[in-house]
Length: 403
Image (cartoon, rainbow, N blue to C red; front, side):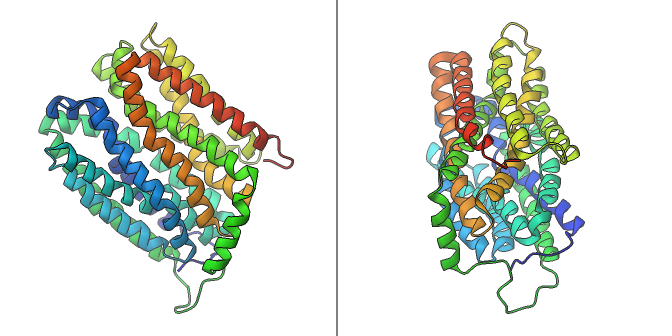
């Protein structure tokens, strides 16, 4: 089980980072990377295909609170490892589909894996295990995992073009099974070293204590503002990333330029996180959140203008990457700073439902907008989401003592 430890294990942190990178590539970015290949090979509409990640994330949102409670009880490592193995099985089954029902079933199973092995459980494990030292560890994980889209888009597109989309999906499944799952297991065991067997770890709560902390947190307006703001940021990104390639093509980009721009998002996620890390003493949570929201809003505006100059899609990718990179660090940190660490697994799991639900709905809503109003309609939605997220965040940013 999990207890605070005075010295983070650097090897374990980097192993978790590798696992998260492969996890996001195989369970999230795979849709955007292979959308055009699926559409051409299967003959299904964007709306039908978008139902897959939508269902996956709806399932993930429903499972997230349960996963959070298991984290509070000390089952983080088992969730991370078992969830990744389940994800490998689900992605492997995706390579065999011939009918929409099979496609949706594979994505539903991927949703369970998503809730068990990606950022929420990983970060909750680190916060519970490392306490005040969790933030640097989270930053390291996200610095590496920021390259998930950089890997997924060119690798997915290249494999699909050279060997077919089924082979591409099989490679993603292999990466999860042979790379991410063992990395999670070894990292978890290393971080648990020195824990006396058969004792409830210090720093974890009984189920009753965790439920009491969760009930107290959800009565606070800050709980709902955090959930709504981060939910809209996640929905904005998921909607855009799901349609990067067709959206860029509509803006006038060549196929090679579109793939290159999509792959640019990852490095700029890392850049945003590095800036936050290097300026940690001067950049508090409030200022970083302001930068995140401004970048998100400006990114959508630049994407609109790229219809006049397609090369602007690279500026959009840079701004979008910085925003999403900051969000992945700020969400667990702001949750812990604003609502405390007691019952953190349950609280963060509940707050995660908003980003997960937003991310789940985004591909389907985006497909409807794209097919009904083209890329312009998609961009208008992205701007609206960013504006409302800013409005929800303002009261949090004005709180006395905010970072």
